[in-house]
Length: 341
Image 1 (tube, helix red, strand yellow):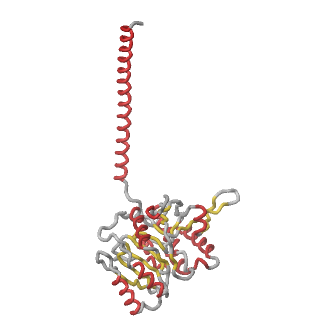
Image 2: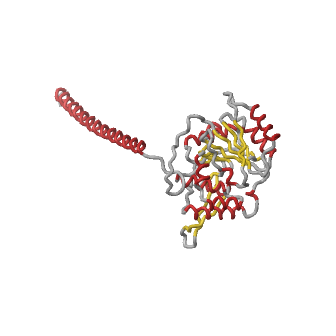
Image 3: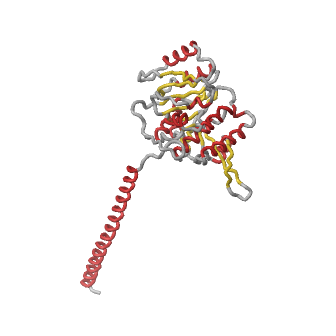
């Protein structure tokens, strides 16, 4: 083949290549355009669906009560709701510690003792509060919520003039570092309708001999959570929740459940977990945190504790007409304090 023929042949090949390249670019461009158009349409439909969706009903089954999940603009901090009973030294230590937390707005002490708090106790706690003003100069409000009846339900009694949306429910014998509480508060702000806490627990359905689940459940403690990595409750001895649930517990919780918890002096925390899960159809959120227990061993060490809690779970299932608790394996961890994550 001569040089002219080679040149001519190469020119033909080059022309064919350019034509093929143009067709390829046209094909790719058309496919890309269709794909981008599909993504835009899908994104638009998702946006419309999100904007048009309404908040789910909050409250008892088939309740018509609705709430907003927006945080009030007036106060962005949280209220410490502390349950106590004739442990004044522990109360003083706990209040003294939490009063220094920067995002704390107020402390409400649930008081159910026969006698009102002494003047000396109130004066001591007020002095502690004044010594530990927040950096912005805001003084933490301290209030005793006095109850005539001695009942565990008092810790969830509605507080109508509460100034914050967030409530941090805590026992007087448990202390968390302020930075840990602040992190849990940040987690709660991302999901204000659910419970966010440090003490996870789980329920398990009993299996019959034929392998089918029965309508009976057992309550399991920490070791079951640790082994399975699964939980369905966070206990209110150390948990954040929205103040609206105080109103729902006070006004919507069946009297039979509240009478049961008062009589048995147990399971009000499980009842609150049922209430929130029933309202949201969502699981709680477990936050990793170091617990410092400054009191004596609680009722969980008493014999038969698990059996009593199991009885509570099944009693509440019957009252609610279903099992509202939702399983999850999610755990919120502050990655700033971890070497590997």
